[in-house]
Image (tube, rainbow, N blue to C red; front, top):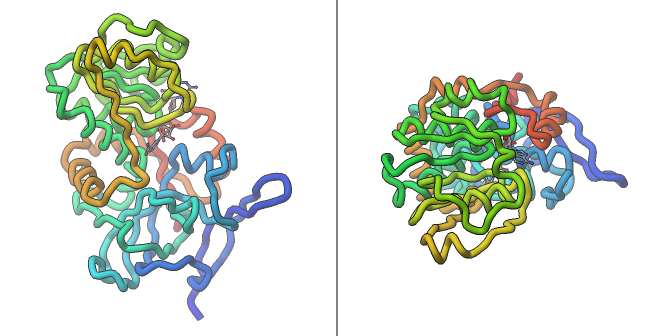
Length: 329
Ligand SMILES: NC(=O)c1ccc[n+]([C@@H]2O[C@H](COP(=O)([O-])OP(=O)(O)OC[C@H]3O[C@@H](n4cnc5c(N)ncnc54)[C@H](OP(=O)(O)O)[C@@H]3O)[C@@H](O)[C@H]2O)c1
């Protein structure tokens, strides 16, 4: 009989869902060809949805949530992995339809894994997590059309996870970064990450003009709704807007004018089903283009028992930067 290990489990109840920390054995894990001893997971916005049930993202009950993990391969029937390899998992529906990272062990399809770049420690890999890897995908989405001297690049939801990593990445790459935040008290934090200017998110959060004054060479948007519509209407001729989030809302009350009069490009960014070569490229870039001192400055650490409360907080916009979950603490 295999040894037991700890996991956070979500159960469906008559009036919603409940959570508990349980001891389970490997027999309880779902099918997969790679078994991993998990060292760290993290907290993303979607984990907040999972943990609270605010939006029904869990598809199979009971569920071990956690859309990310890093750990060491214990057993593998997959050609690309062997015992001892250090691997990262982001997305692929893990934590939603397949048991996820809020556990000391996981078993998954090896096709979902990427090898951890040596330069990124396990804890830092989860400080990056889906939020940071998505920020990298957003940067990669705007880069081809945005020379570093093109002008100011706007990052919305800047004090959140995606936003914080995007600010740090863009600043290191030499862009002039404008951070939009609703938290004026985080101005020093955002300047420390490399923002050259801070704007109040209220400037972008109400219905605006279909075609506004040109301001941004490019945009990384984690917020959606009016914020994204205004960011598009303020993007300069030929600029690109990378849209990855919906913290304000999933709607897009925008006009076609910026597209047909300014040739603005709106690029959708998805991390969950992104193909493996793109993931590997993003993680390789993170190893070289992210300032780890800045990553450390935006990161705090918590344990599995903190997760239910942190899930509420991230949805309320009350967490800053990135939170690593030490599953063995
Ligand atoms: N497409 C993908 O694959 C992908 C991957 C990861 C995340 N996402 C999405 O990206 C978004 C951000 O994720 P995250 O992990 O960075 O979450 P997060 O840490 O909670 O950051 C979201 C930030 O958005 C801002 N915000 C919150 N509510 C707002 C509102 N009502 N109006 C305007 N701004 C608001 C806040 O920033 P300030 O306090 O600075 O204003 C908040 O910190 C989420 O919607 C998430 O689902 C998508």
